[in-house]
Length: 447
Ligand SMILES: [Ca+2]
Ligand SMILES: [Ca+2]
Ligand SMILES: [Ca+2]
Image (cartoon, rainbow, N blue to C red; front, side, top):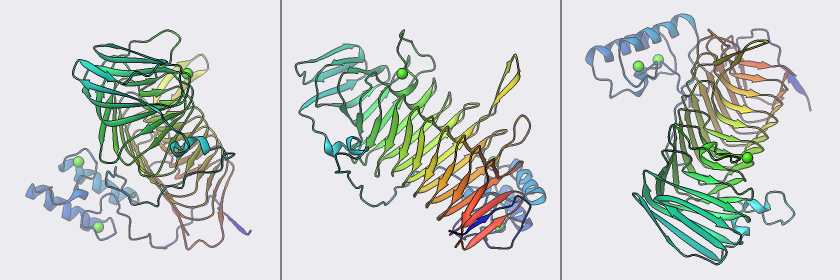
């Protein structure tokens, strides 16, 4: 295969960007950001009618004011405007999920269709209490108010959680894999994780179509010695999300969703995570986004939207991540150690084979992607915006210690104050691209 090797000199070309994208500051919606937009914005601010134009909030502080005019003037004067990245809660039409039916395939066990559940335990939360129905032999269930603890030694159990409590939780110790169905659950634990799975086997988390579910933690966790409890939804074992229902997670004490194993998101799922204390989604051994809608907003300093300690794959769906935090600086004996935010942090290989991935970091030094290994993109649509200032750290679009290869799809990366692409091992783009633009601020590749 002939490869084009990108040289990191500044090569500006006049290839037009695809018209399907909107740019920050394009108030008059003509595909360009220039003085005409300033005029439009001044008129909007003067008329005090901002409701008609979603683009008027240039600085994205949720109000339209003179400050937006200042931001827009700066954008027009001193830099190229980035593409606009916003969380997108709309439904996504996607191809039906293909169930792995080869028993020898590594992912076979991730498909709930290949498992069976012969006992059902239903837990109905209601304020300060929780009612339990179905108590199979081998499963012990205790409640303290609406805090429920399950100890199970048996196979093939499905737990269905429903109802609501603002002072409740579900904690499970299980020797076997199990199914956890959230059937319209609204559960907040003010002193820890709302769901705390201490089982190292597979957790099939099912969101039935038509259900809305909400999980939240509290600012301070009551810790248990020798037990991890790292998120509003924490699991020692792998979590496999399926079902077409919705899950909203609000984390104010720790991360949103964490597994000490891996996490798989299957097509059809719809998950929104807000985290103000730590990461959005974190897994030690891998994250696989096969499909579904995933929106992550992280406001904590130094935190990551998606933080993956193992192999990271994006195979489908629509994932949008926004981080807004500043760097965290710790002084060590060797000097200051700076930890910046990143929309996506991958400790090993990052593979993108499909789907839409939109990543934005707006805080000082915030990265779009921070990858310690290689990035391999074979398809999909990637938009990366690092929009922060460069005071304490450099806000790079992509910071990659390995190589980046793009063989198909569409890839755009932007940095307002630093490098859009900082790839230590070099960038290769296959022949056959139909657009390639590189400026001081952005790199855009389209096949
Ligand atoms: Ca315009
Ligand atoms: Ca504003
Ligand atoms: Ca652990």
